[in-house]
Image (tube, rainbow, N blue to C red; front, side, top):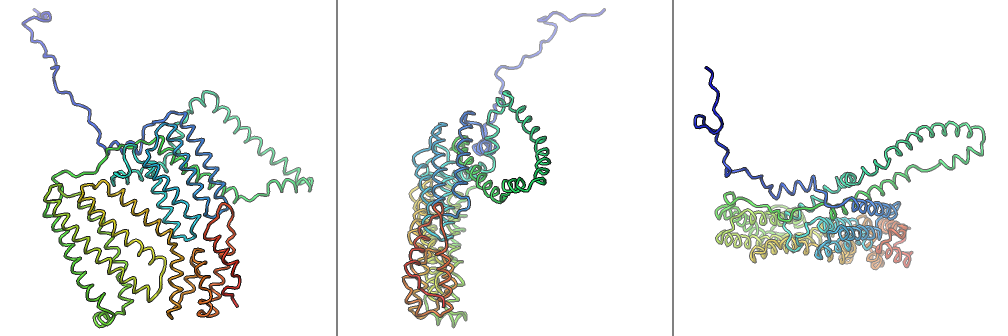
Length: 535
């Protein structure tokens, strides 16, 4: 006999156990700060409405036309600062309209970038223009790409690197992102695709027909052929150059506007090590202590050889004093420069205990003092080498960088000592900007020309070939010493300088590429047309 199951709830049949209501439910994982940054950087969420996308496109297109108007068939001069100022103004305007206003401290940074971009209108030195423009681009990137809640004075190295990385990604992808944001659906709904297809098809049919009939008419009448030839007789290179500047301006402007309007970086991203991986007192002591020992041994050697005079050097290693100075100058500057990231990295990786902090400060102070002694040695080497062979651009800029490196090392120590490491990068940027401003005011090529020209009065060799290749910044200084140069140089050397002066006088700057130094050089040459005449 077949039995049937009892009704539900019958004691004869066990009931399934319902799931516990208080069972642990796996919570969704929270992405780390770095994951959020990567997501925002490579696939940023759209934080602007399509109407603002049209604003970016319109401003970028206007800036593209402005770029072509400034740089087409023109060199670098006042047009550079006009271009930077337009980009900065449009960026600040876009940020306010989105609205994502730029904080006041970053507006100062953007203003400093615009000011540095004015160097091509002031100085003619290619090296000085390069350094200034690199600094201007870096400051502009910081101004437009830092998160709104990150201040420049307390900017971490991670925020600095990621802001510049964000600018680089925007340069590569902002056009595509902007195009994807535009309301193409509305355009399709209004028949935009059909209208475009109709225009393209009409042109494909009309152009070959016009070409055939036009060719027949040109063969039938010489006057018509001549008129048609005038219409189509154009230089394709003009369109290529115009197209380059239009695309370049659109590319840079879109990236800058997109960075402030659509890219939103996390402000809480930090780089840290787990406590178990941090360097303890032993590791810090071994690394920095061994470096300090090596530096001390080198300084002791320098006391005897570098400051002992030429006789000691020649009798010991068989080199002249100038050869000895030249051989080690750049290596010593590299040593001082490399110590900066070493100290910053060890301070970041060490344990944040009182004992580790005291040990780091003691050894860092010893290393900095020894490094300053090494830099004095490098300075002394360059002084000897300059006295023997004169001054060049490379030697000038490396020597100029030495006080900046020394100040940065001291600033590292002060930042750690006062427990304000977060202020190091902002202070270092301020030191670098101040150093660059001093170099711009000093006029490097004029200093080089004056230093080398003074060697003639000391009876030393004067390299006219190198001095003649300096920029227009050096021309007024050389013309002030024209009588000394004319009496000391050979006819061939005078001819070299005269030809260099003629090249500067024929620069032919227009309004867009106007430059103060080139204008001053042309004015001085016009006042002394007979200076160092080439016989």
